[in-house]
Length: 360
Image (cartoon, rainbow, N blue to C red; front, side):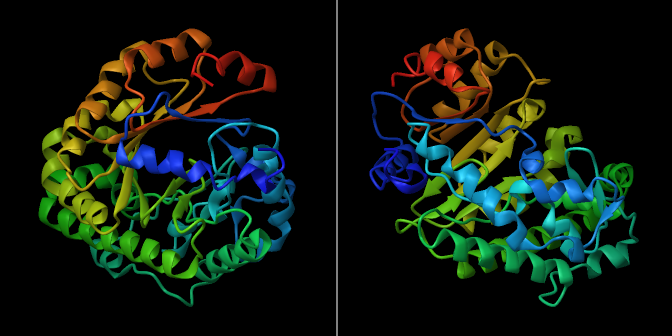
């Protein structure tokens, strides 16, 4: 496949269709990536921000990122796997959505984070998308620049935007948002629904702007092509929610988001597995994506949760780094149907060691 630009051979689409349809296959959908958890360091322009405390729209010129976006996507020309590769505005871990809603963006060594604002209830309810906001305009300019540079050779997508509970935390304050759930459950439910509508509207706006790739949609963070409109639902803040609070205040919002997009998936960490049953109660969710984090539960302890996802009839995308023994355990423990192994590696030699284990 190296002769195909970016390795995006159209024949790969059939494997993605099998993944979404959970068809019987001989092996999982498999991809390898040399890009780490914090891709900001892959973009030369980001080095200019190191001395800054906060990032402003004037410091971000989308065209300055394009050469590095193309370089990263060309990984597919040297790695022979099943993945389609593309680009998105927040591939540099820049949280555009919080910035659009007024949160300052703090520059960290390997990341950019939206600062919490500790807004009043009245101020939080007044937050909304503004098509004239400088960060909104910058986001759309980033998308347009990627679409122009891709010229149909690779897909462009939304970024890994944070979800309603995460937005609640940075708007009201992380500690304050937790107290809100207990002290003001009705206001919390109303705010979470409002923020869910903002997330939904953002994704719908993006998909009206981005051209399809091979008649489908795409999530660049996970190299996930889909036959229908896609949304990545993130609720990292629920790691400190009780199952009861999640079901009462958040689950209706996540159900609304999942129902609005035919190929919806939820991003999870091992720290949220105590809520897995509640997530799986959302019938509208097509797929669950779970990170194998370095500081999370061991792979052996995660296997029962992976199995539970598969037993629920959902597609499962697992992303992270794995030793050969961990990969053997996954292959022995999980069904290949509806399984996508998005494997992070440090060298081509590591890829070659893992290829026979996953059946390639």
